[in-house]
Length: 75
Image (cartoon, rainbow, N blue to C red; front, side):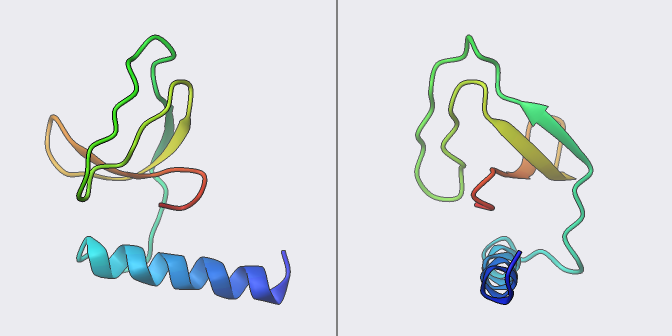
């Protein structure tokens, strides 16, 4: 990873923390795969667009039905 890539990752992480009012460092708790048989969902706002078979990093369990995740593009 080059210095430019590191700075871009830091910038994306800062934007993530600001958008979701996330305090502290971002730690990945686990990774999950979107069900390959699921229908693709493209909601607006803060919901992450999901693709079949995509691997997501789980950042925080917010409640029993929702989790805070990011995809491979760090979104």
